[in-house]
Image (cartoon, rainbow, N blue to C red; front, top):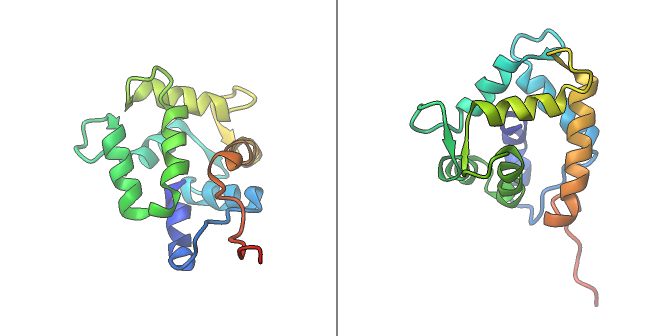
Length: 148
C-alpha cells in the first residue's frame, strides 16, 4: 500500500486531507505497485516484501513503533489510517506484526482460497476496507471551506 501512496505525496503536500477516492482506482494502483513480478496476481512472498519496508531492524517482525516511524517519515498525512491498519493486521494484539499476522492478512484478501490474490480480489478487499475506515479518519473526503 505504501508504495502507491508514496506516489501521492507530492500532490498531498499542501492538502489538509487526503482523498483516496475512488477507492477501486486507489486499490488498483496499490495492486500494480505490490505485484512485483507483474503476473497479475499477488503471492504471499510479495506481501512479505511489502512489509519488509517497515521492518527497521530487519528481524522479520514489525513493531508498532517501527511501522508508525516508517509511516511518519513517508506518509504523515495517513498516520491515522495506518494506525487503524496496524490494529487490523495485528490479529493477536501483541503490537508486533509477524508471519501469522501476514498469513491472516493474505487469507483475508484471497477470497477463493487458492493461494493467490487476483487483481479482482485485491481491489475488492481494499475498496471495502477503505470504505469501512473512511468514517474513522475522514481521509476519503475533500477539504471543505468553512460555512459562512
